[in-house]
Image (tube, rainbow, N blue to C red; front, side):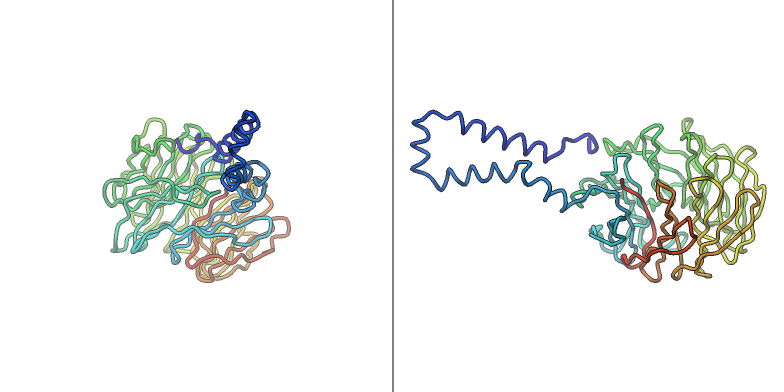
Length: 374
């Protein structure tokens, strides 16, 4: 069980403390014998001391546990680890794949484990190689510690850790499902049919009971009953749609029309589109601010983030960012929004009190998916 495993530093400290304790209890005649083998004795003692808590702070600095921002770099086929205090990339974790790559990432509640589905070699709906696995990464040690194999090419894409039932939900496009994975055993324990092709992105309500997939090519949204594992409704949106998110109060879901510059606002009580919000270009990823007042919308072609007032359902300002903004993640404290901008290989950090970009963070080529690890 990956998340319940003991801390290796604790084990090391226990071993080394016991070693020193027993050395001090040796009888006098043993000290005489050990003195004749001084180099060996000193090596044993030094090894014990080096494993104790005296050196623990140095190890902790080598592999900080957070908070960090994780960025999936499609072009570089790796995961950036960004120190949010300094706004600098401090490490990269290679996916270890060849012709395929990951797009998105999710983290466990304890902030230690990252989950990166390996989508394939191409974009949604396009011909190419189909991914069949998901990587499990230990963030502090920056190592791949497990894999989930879906058995065949399914183009696994967007993962969400549902904190209410403790399961991991991953869109598996070619199966027209959302797969359910036990994150402790790394076993697939079920699936939810979406009834549509290209179920690319997923949003889950804050109570963990409803799911919403953006089905790109069909231009629809599937509404899922998470506990019952069934499709409740399929909502027509447009000829093509992309990305999806849900409001803080779960009353609205948002997805972007890919044929017209507008945002669909879905009433989750009726499962119907209740309004359209005109945008300054085709929209993409969205995220609500923590106070629930605004929705941030990435507009790739215009290189801006549009800010929609959720009371009036109108764009009230735009924020210039580097080319091709993709995904938006609002920091847990609500003060900063991170925006992946994959043409420039940068993440824009937007100060939500001033609505200005406070920093540009250099990451890897083709940066896209974002996740927070505390």
